[in-house]
Length: 151
Image 1 (cartoon, helix red, strand yellow):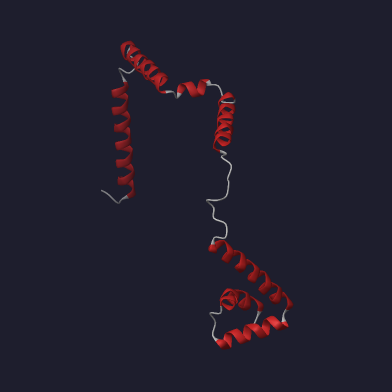
Image 2: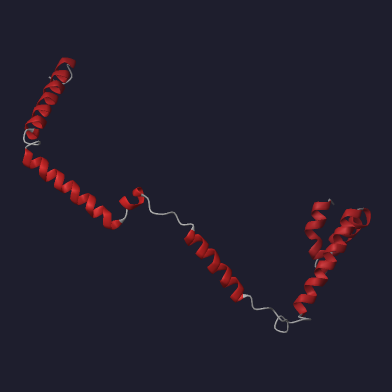
């Protein structure tokens, strides 16, 4: 039996839950291996501590725990006030994304669009788009016809 297997089954060995054959093999290994013997002693001590705690030799209700709520809340408030003091001041980029200033930007865009429409900047745009569309259609048709695939 190797050390890893013995350490894995050690809790069952301590509690006496193993078959007699498995218990014998573990006991023989522990007698021949000083590391596993040390491990067994530590495991027994831990088991004893755990049993003492489970038996409730000293109930948690009888212990006098200090009330640290006020101190913790004071520290949290101090950290929060420090964070507020170190807060980054609003920059121009941050102001642009603020909800109340975004309406101003939309208003300016609408005003400029209206002004450009009144000045006639967009008056020939529809003709230009139609002209580009016609050129595209002609060139695609010519390309397909010269390729011989779509006559």
